Length: 115
Length: 112
Image (cartoon, rainbow over all chains, first blue to last red):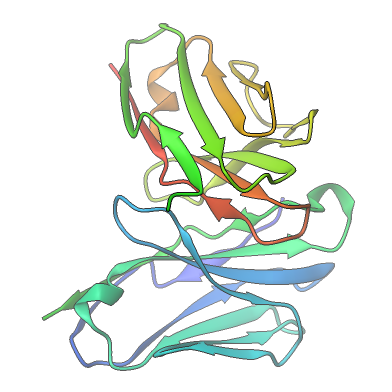
C-alpha cells in the first residue's frame, strides 16, 4: 500500500504571510507528483505536475519543489491572500506495477488565510 | 465552462436504498475515474474505465458498481448504501493513463 503523507493537516495564516507545506511519498518507482488546489464547492484544480528530481515550478505566488531521491515535495505560497484558502492535495503516480496510471493522494492540507 | 460535470452535487439516500451518481465530460477523454473521499481522508480510487475496459481496485467493495455507456458518461451505482458509504465522490477524466486528470466538483452523499 502506497503511503502519501501531507503535513500539516491544517494551517491558519494571516493575509500577507508566506507559508509552505509538505508532501512525502515513497521514492521507489516514481513517475510524477501532482499538486491540486481544491476550493470549497469547486473542482480540484491542477497546480503542478512535477517529474524530475530538483524540479521547481512556479505559478504566480505559488511555487513547488521536488526531491525524488528522498521522497518529498514542498509547496510554497508567498504573501497569502484570502482567496488562497483551500485544501491543497498532492498525489503520486508511479512508473509501473499495479499503480500504473493511478493517482495515490495524500489527505490534504487545509489552508485558511485570515484577512 | 465546466468540462467534468457531476450530478447531483448533493445526494441524500436511505440506508439500503440503491443510488446512482452521474458524471459527464466534454473533453472526449479515454479514461474516467471514480474516487471516494471520506472526511479528513485522502481521496481513494474505486475504479476506472479505459474506454470500455473496466478496472476495479482490489479493495473496492462489491456494493460499488460502475457503468460507462458511452465516452461522455460514467455512472457510479451503490447497490445497498451503508452509513459508512457517506462521503464525497469525485469523478475525473484523463486523455490517457499517466496524464493529467481533470476533476468534477464532486457529489456529497449522505446516508440516513
